[in-house]
Amino acid sequence: METWPTYARFLMDGAGETPQPNFIRSEMERGPVKARRLNSHARVHLPGQVLFLSRADIAAFDAWYFDTIKEVGWFTFRHPRTGQLVTASIVELGTRVPLAGPYAVASQPGPLGYMR
Image 1 (cartoon, helix red, strand yellow):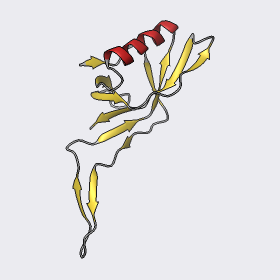
Image 2 (tube, rainbow, N blue to C red; image 1 turned 90 degrees about the vertical axis):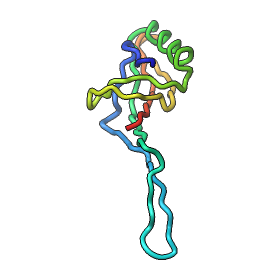
Image 3 (cartoon, rainbow, N blue to C red; image 1 turned 30 degrees about the vertical axis):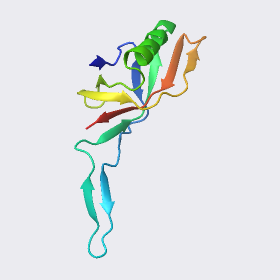
């Protein structure tokens, strides 16, 4: 399995983690609502930014994202809060913006999702 590249620094936006709903509720004709789990593991959304400190880091990340994990692949990632290795995927990459010079330093929204 692939690993998150060390040259792409993941910065959490605030301190938010959002577990996605993992259950279904059914209204009953009488009595309480019935609920059941959909999956054995819950998916957690981890918002953040990917920070690149050079143009070479951007090129290497693009190669990893498009050619190695092919935009939808899973990889191991060290969780910034717990320090544990989790299996994650990139939910959706946002618009990359330069922070210094013509992309000498840049950031890009890149929320991750992982199974808990």
